[in-house]
Amino acid sequence: MIPRNRPVINEADVARRIGVPLATWRRRDAPGFRSRVPSLLPESRYLVYDLAQAEAYIDGKPIPALPQDEHPEDLLTADEAAAVLGINPGTVRAYAVQGYLSAGTTVYGARLWPRREVNKRRDNPPGQGKGGGRRAGEPQVPRKQHSYEGDPRLRTASEALAAANSAPKSRIAAELAAEHGGTPRTWERLLTAAAALQDGAPEARA
Image (cartoon, rainbow, N blue to C red; front, top):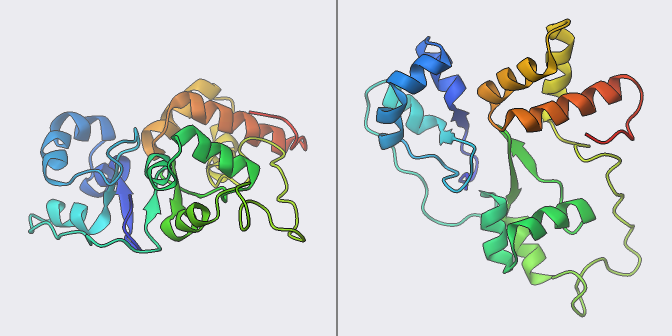
């Protein structure tokens, strides 16, 4: 969970602030950093940290505490949203595709949903009696034309393609994964989707 209105940072940006390559930082500095500054998404493969805590560690200052109370603007992972809704994380992602939840917000590669939206869905489960699912008269939520439609990482992928000239897609994907989080395979799909959009084929699936 990312607490309400808390700026965050990933390890690539931490290394950049210190002025060392990411590989060097992970080998030399990451163990000490991780022992003092916990990832905000511990159940996720994405390592995302509170910016104020990370800056305090870098400056040798006391690590500030995070808010402990729940707030409607907290950002929840699929696992956390699933716990609130009483479903599995795969169903949360399916809800986002089907329009029962929004597409969410992508932060350093991790897909997150506001607590207020998850709580509203919990109180109005889809297809279960009055108040469930899409109400009469509400417009049908359009399906995505491709799996990454609306994903802010598409812009990053497009910019990387434009700057890469003839570099292999696998190398571009590996560099994007190291800098922004996620897997090289996911970034390869994003690069494929971005290339299809540049070619005027939004229907192409990554």
